[in-house]
Image 1 (cartoon, rainbow, N blue to C red):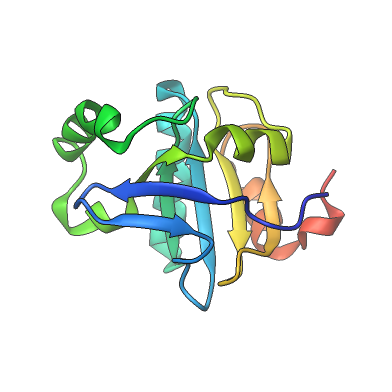
Image 2 (cartoon, one colour):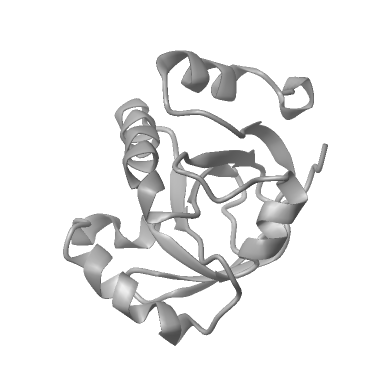
Length: 150
């Protein structure tokens, strides 16, 4: 199983450029990754569960192919209309590294969120690869180490 986050580059809805793993907080956090517009409801369920429990996370809507940040501005404008301004820094549109992310973890672009719990240096501590949000999936993601996942 891959144990490191590949290099990613993105822009928050507030316009700040971030590079991962370099810009991850030292304490680490959960990454909620969506590859399709259809995953938005599942992404939202995971984000709500984390927020309700005070679990730090970032939401990473991820481009299918590497592109310039400017190419995603139309999507950013639409997202800003629906995302409260107070959480714009928690949404990072990934415009470089999405292909590597899918290849590294063997993910397809489907209607479900993909999750990684990472340390500050990008080590993967847990992951959720398939299926929708559920309380059982949340418990498994939070309690079991990545090495025990199928």
